[in-house]
Image 1: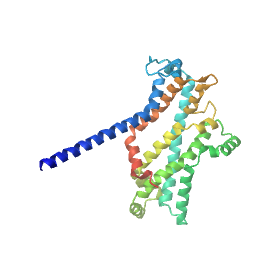
Image 2: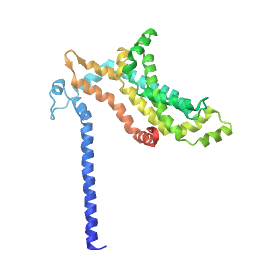
Image 3: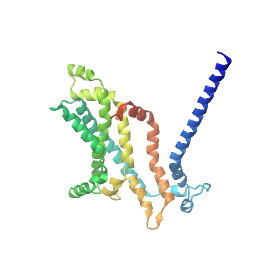
Image 4: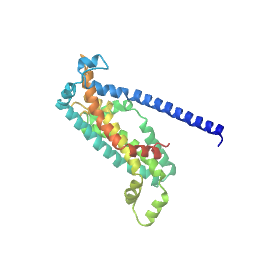
Length: 287
């Protein structure tokens, strides 16, 4: 290598390093900008109401607000309701969505195009906003006395989230080689055995991703919980709306309760981020 080539090579390395540094700075700046509302919410939980009303960078932190929120016994009731909805809502959505996705991929319908039409129906259901069906749903719930009951809210959550499970798991089942299932059928495996012993283990990454998304969606859901339940059966997002009264917004208490409510989702996402990213990248979001 000549001296001129060596100098040119060093210049390319420097340019590449500068580009990487600039890109890293931009990424960190965007990340800080995106995370700033969460950071502000977290810090506001350590302020008094007077300090939270007039935001300032420097303040004397206090646990008074967190003590006030955690000493409220009704918060634990709302938390218990949220955990109930998340656990059973995710479990039932998976129990209904996985067999439905398996039937759409490996089932034998009378008309071949029926499978695609049913799958398209599931996809379009995901796009349906809850406000579009609130009035008929509320009327139907009143008729069958499901208003202010945990089972009524659970039925709504399952109905809205089964299509998400079908959408994600269907993509993973479609990528599985059908020769495996044909061989299993020749060996005498029933459809249920093919689903439980072959399809589900091979598509476990997609199933984990679907369950995580459904759990987070149910945990964060506010609209249905606010309109279909009362105080005894409402979830944690509805509880946080209680801090807005005629006197104004209790910013510090709302920030503290919001921090407590987002912690489970953040911890769960952090613990399972590898499986979630792998599931999304491996084909769960393909058209």
